Amino acid sequence: GKGSVYEGGIRIPCMMRWPGHIEPGATSQQVTTAQDLYPTIASATGIALEANQKLDGKSVWNALRNNHELVNGPFIVAGSDIAIFDGDWKLIQNQDGRLSLFNLRTDPRESINVWDQNVETGERLKKQLLEAASKFPSLAQRRGPPPGNPGPRRPNPR
Image 1 (cartoon, rainbow, N blue to C red):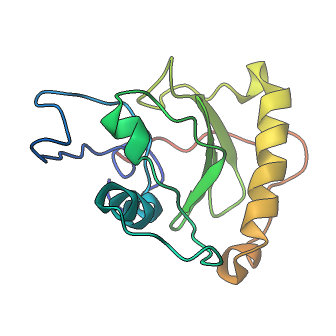
Image 2 (image 1 turned 180 degrees about the vertical axis):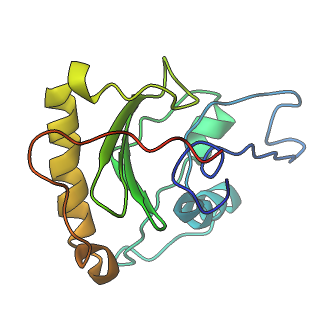
Image 3 (image 1 turned 60 degrees about the vertical axis):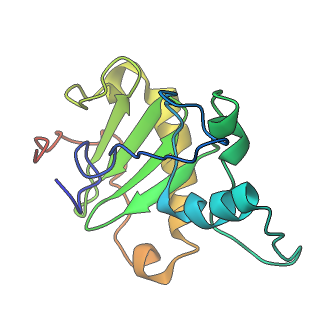
């Protein structure tokens, strides 16, 4: 599933070992993206980043070190399809514009498209997805989602 925005291409485990800094056996469910690695490592090692340095990610070091979850704001992941994550919610727009909405807390395997039961959440995420995608030329060139019903859900390619 690597390269896919569906489960299997996104959620992967990460292991860290740093005696004296990370408690042995500690676990975390912290959502982290590859863009968070640089600011997290800088924070953990005490390297100050320039104030005007624009980063796509943020440090999650305090959340990892103190074993609590940092709530991430919406963020996107793109491949041939594009997805936006916001808390427990994930909206996927396929290349052809079809949309699927998942509640990751109740359905971490993304097997049930809950768009019809959560249209307001879906529309909010769709708006955020289109706004975020407009900042990336290669994503903005894609055809937007069709109006109205998001259409049938493509089977998860796991």
